[in-house]
Length: 582
Image 1 (cartoon, rainbow, N blue to C red):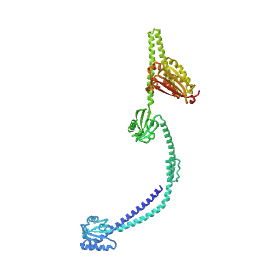
Image 2: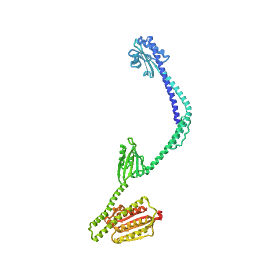
Image 3: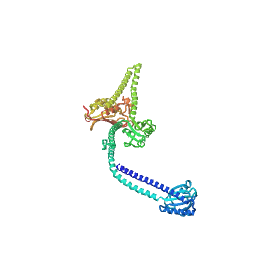
Image 4: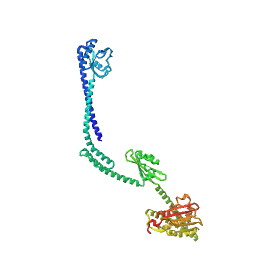
């Protein structure tokens, strides 16, 4: 900046000097030309008064040459005598007969019209710039033209230009010596302010520029106040942006924003995941970033119409996408897009609908049977004691089935509540719970001619209630017995596997077809519906097992071949690994 001010000041001095010199030179030239024009005009009047207007052409030629010789002692003046038509009668510097008509010369035309005329131009005959003055005689109509070279005027202008240049050079040298310390003194506080502004731009707001007590000093105080205000505003902005960014990134909804030029401004992790947006896409055009044409078209329509819109994506996930314009002015300044994953909600809605349908069906079947047989008893048809006994046995079976169904539903509700609220630090012996389940199931297995085989290890302490562990093992063993053939076998094994207690229930029954594999743990789902209902099953056994395993941080898997049998494996962390209290 110092260099610029220095050069600017010198430039101003130089321009002032040059401009002044040009004005003086032009003014001097104008004055000298005006004086020469007056002199030549007066000289023409004197010559007309000497009788040149009445002289014959030969005499006039002699008079013109005599006047030219007389004037040549002072300066070179050319005289030309013309008739009223502009034809040359005599010339002091050339043969009149060889000269063309001068009627087209500006000064001659002007003299013909007004009596006097003048012009400055370059003479093609003499090869230099001349001042031409023409004066007409009213009596004879003749025109006398006098031409004087402007070399003296040009010389005077050159002298003025030279002296102006020398004066300008001296002024520049003087100004250079004076301006150097002045510019340094003026630029120093500005330099401090510039350094302070740079520090503010880099985020350093603790600046105190070193300036004086003049206007620049007041500017420095304003800089300090501005820096403090910027520091406070930056802190508020940073804090607010961090809070907003944390909220948006922690939100379970997908949120993204685009500007009016369809460039991506922000996308939180759920939006990047669900819409398959690369993490480094901020600032890029929306079209190559968004793979979903439906979302892209929704955003473009929102920006164009400045109205909110909505669409739904049905793929691996069901996504509800809502777009709204940013700002109330038109056109929209941008758009914000909210993406909600509806997959689980729709699944739960379907499960709820299916569960309600299944519960209604499962409850209706035994209730219908019970009501039918009750009506039969009331009608008096079953008077035979044997028939009555048979009907009562059926009513007892259906009521037990209804009771079992309600018990299983209550158990599922209790387990789901346990998954949401957690469980207390309970512990039990998995082997003992399995042994109790085997004892309970032995009677049913003997009735169906199924051989139960057990290979139980020593105590396997796990986290959980013993009645629930018994219920889990009983459900697995009961399914292995029910979905078997007469003469089949069921092998039950408990053993430690590293940090886990493992329960295996294997059978050589009918097995599970591959198409049923993903649904066997669903409520009321039966692989063989006819056999399950015939054996009194509720369709909730494996669902209860799955919830029990999940409740106590275990895992369950199975291997099955249709027609060959099934093997279920359940693992729980051993008590020593869970940290549960005995």
